[in-house]
Length: 141
Length: 331
Image (cartoon, rainbow over all chains, first blue to last red; front, side):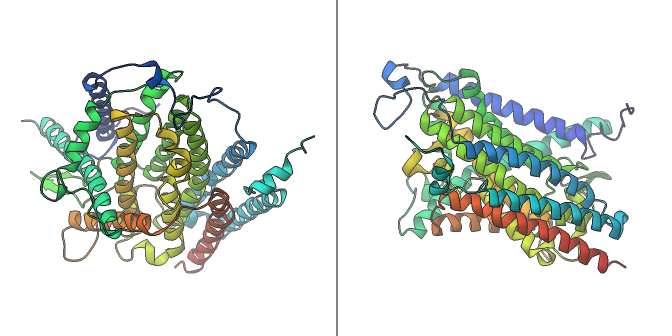
């Protein structure tokens, strides 16, 4: 644990102190807006009004339905690629020091990443057309 | 008065001015957008409240504040109530690391033209824009409405997909500036703005940022003719207003980010730095409004395929090529 640097607490330096104060003001402002809207708005609860809007038709079933798998897959792909983006960033900031060896290593890494993307592509993980999704589903009997 | 007290007072004034200008810009951006869209579609747009409709944002704010704060039946109350603040809050916080002027000198002390010069500023921006996704996903999920959930799922998938391209497009900027701090990035553009060195990265960043903001042509999460309003269907009053505010503050911060990353920040000939910064922001914002008035909405499969099959591979190749050229040209 490092001792607190007096420069970071100085109001003149654009450091963490300034950021903390700005964050506090933003949070305070949002809290004020949320309290004001609750306090100023007229409350007239009504059974019909409280129903979720579905173009005037009375809703059937819950709204927390099961959603298509491709959305879940995208989240998984994102996780993999985002971690790798973090690694690429850490190379980018030190590009001059790492020189050609670093470039070769990151190029190798990026090419593997691209091969992975092509594999996803060929497997149909990036296909969003309705036909291809329907094809992937088991046939209805 | 001691230097510390004076510093605190000046800092508070600076922060309040930044925040008020940011909020006013966002509020008037709504007016400017409606007005410009009106002109582009051969109609007048809002022109009733005040001269030329200039008081419209104030009328809107009063109306939003006095509307009923409605919570639909079966909603997850806590998440429903606070999700909009997440969107507006992250949008406002992103501006903290963007340099907007060279800075001023007051009684021999430097007043920097940035709220906070973090040494990980760029990562801070990426992290906050990721947290913004939660506001959309949670708000839509907690509404207990089918339209809202569909909008939220689409929005989350779209935003995380384009976030990859957004991050990868910034890697060449980091390589050229060799720093994550936005002040250093602007400093590195003293001779040449990065848009000249990296036009491809600029294009990828701009397109992905439009998709991150869910604006036309990427506004499928709130496509009004199929999903009513998407994830904010059930919101009313200022909570709806916060989603809206977040969206328009993001437009301003996107202009500021593009200025800092690619257009040379507050740098420019003749005019004062602050003015150059605003000019660059307004050019980006006008381009966004123009795009909205011109382009139709993309189909969902086209949208996802464009992000994954074109933007991400191109951005990755751009990184390899830029790195090679930079090392080859090194002195």
